Image (cartoon, rainbow, N blue to C red; front, side, top):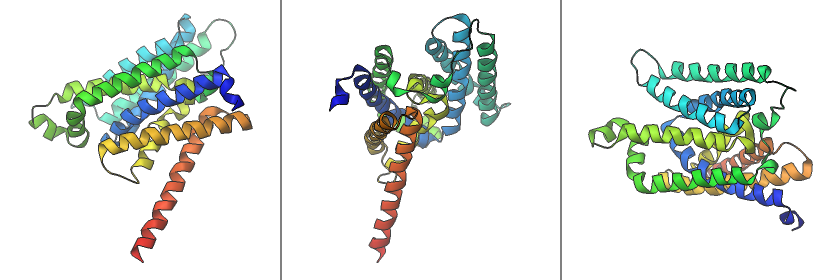
Length: 271
């Protein structure tokens, strides 16, 4: 195909692949542990890091990474305290990140920066450094899950049982929270702050229609996530619409199609 000759399209394909791997792995843990609200909080908290980066002149992605990781550790720590509810801890970092992001953005010297790339993403602008970051996170996640897959499954389904078995629950929880933060920031250029949470949940929801096994959901989520990226990429290119929204739209279309197909199949089975 002619499109494959373009460097930006090749980068988009690679970026989508590594993003699908990272989101497929960590997203399965998020959905299983019901951490979607926490992930949403970290996503919006990262906006504070972007604003800080624009204000200080350092890389917004670097500052967003630091801000998001610190927010993840803070949410996890506050949620363990008896005097702070988990949803309250999330709300603190969620609103603080958005507020600081807006303040620092407006205080940034020079012309007002264009935030659309960070809010809605553009997979066609993915660079080599973004691909390297996604690849590194994907490999680190794959290695961590390969080594600790059974403790992770125990923690995901029943933390108290995992703790009674002497498993390193605290270490696993904090490490995975950091991975969630890193994955969110790494995917910002692709789908943006507004839509990145969907990339961490919709493929898993689709995979869950076919299996309830943790490992199989991971593999299916990676495949479904990449199909969503490919479909959204072509929609974005040919219709000249934002890539982030296109990827999420196509992913939801896959989910709706699979959900409808499974419903028809179940009805036929009952007849």
